[in-house]
Length: 176
Ligand SMILES: [Zn+2]
Ligand SMILES: [Zn+2]
Image (cartoon, rainbow, N blue to C red; front, top):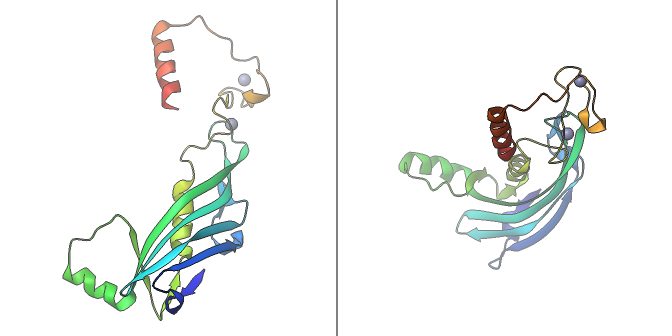
């Protein structure tokens, strides 16, 4: 996902890429890419700075945080980044303390801009923090470990409800 900045004209450089998922190191047991990554977007050059804006589409394979079953979650998110020349970036850091952090700054060298890192980071940011296979996933029985989505296990009888617990439970449900 490397671009030559000389290819970026005044009107910018539009692109559409399909990149193999093996190009990204997103391959943990609990989070891996299950599809290739497509990125569509635009590179613009302002003086020596290059701005990326684009849209990422892919799919990740995750583990449900309640029942521990694998699940797939589509990723469809925006990415933006700013690339500054490597030498200039160093100079800037020492000259000015104040940096606007609305877009991440990446560095480039030898007139080549590589958008792999911001795309990688953005995919990870888009992954749900608490993945669920479904919003009403029943999870595992804390006693026997059975996946309660497959039916009740029998070891957990409903106790007559304590109203205070019921309030807590409904609060908990709201937070999910
Ligand atoms: Zn689940
Ligand atoms: Zn059980």
